[in-house]
Image (cartoon, rainbow, N blue to C red; front, side, top):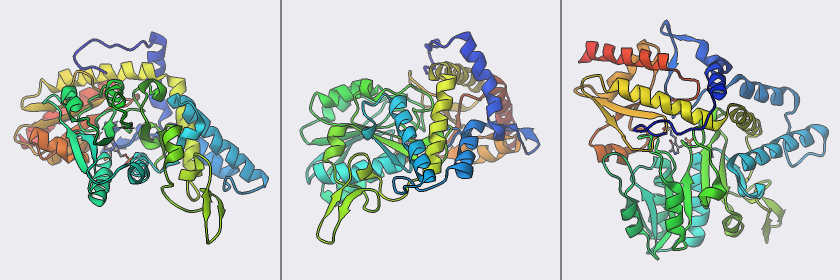
Length: 420
Ligand code: C6P
């Protein structure tokens, strides 16, 4: 996880070997792109899917597909059991206390919108403050901004230093009796910074302020224990952790979820409806209106099983080594500036090249079979902080290799040949 120090993971050699072999689990990675072996370094945008996840979803649609919580027939019962079984897996994956604290949503974005909408309208009033950080993804800025505009509340921002680390003393200074919630990312998608969530939560809780953690970039890399972090809400998407798109999770402490009003109305979230009055369903169904992404949920369950098989500690160590290797190599290229040099980093390498617009880097790398992302990464305030319009971003996953880093570095030399 760190770029500056030696690996800290506890993975055994056997684990590392198992991971090295896991590339074969991802069918998509076998293809050539522009005649070159695909180097997929866009994992922060979405990860590839192992065969077991694809198979689980195909099997579901071939043998179990049915609507859940409704039918009294065989298929509906099987589908309900399978889907609710995934909730148990998610509870264990995050080490939540109770599976009623696990709400299925479309993804991290919807999870944050749910809290902004439901918690926000219950607990935030004119004159109150909401605290986000300077390194947030737009998904953890805009929902709060919308809320603030509607209610006459104010959005406050925890600043960061030029390495891309939050200024914890400034954070402490910003916390006040006006602060109604802190919303902060676990891992920055644009910088790779891993934030000290436990400390941030402890400082907010010392003043009775709840904390939402955007875990979209954390769950594929770091073992998350919501009871240990003691956060009040934790949001993530399945598609960045080897699961399908269109499904994600909001963890919320029961004491909050019980009190919060529903986010959307519809089927499944009610106990009874008359034109005079509706009573709402128990947790977590109160927040799950309409037919959910059942097949996607099954895929998420398979992705969690897969991550258990591989071992997150081993993944963390491997990705750390890869990031360290790529960082050393890229710094040998003249004119490269790394954006995001925090002590604690996950597998994201954001950079610029002197005299070359980041948008021009992507297409040349693509011709070499290397897939990266260029742009503002939905984190425009980060770009503003570093005075750049955009960055090029390579982001790693457990199936990436040092040989791929070498191909990436070679492709960057091509960029200089063509544009430098
Ligand atoms: N970041 C990236 O390329 P959704 O779209 O709901 O699955 O995730 C939104 C989101 C929220 N928080 C963070 C920290 C994120 O990185 C993302 C998604 C992608 O960096 C797509 S913009």
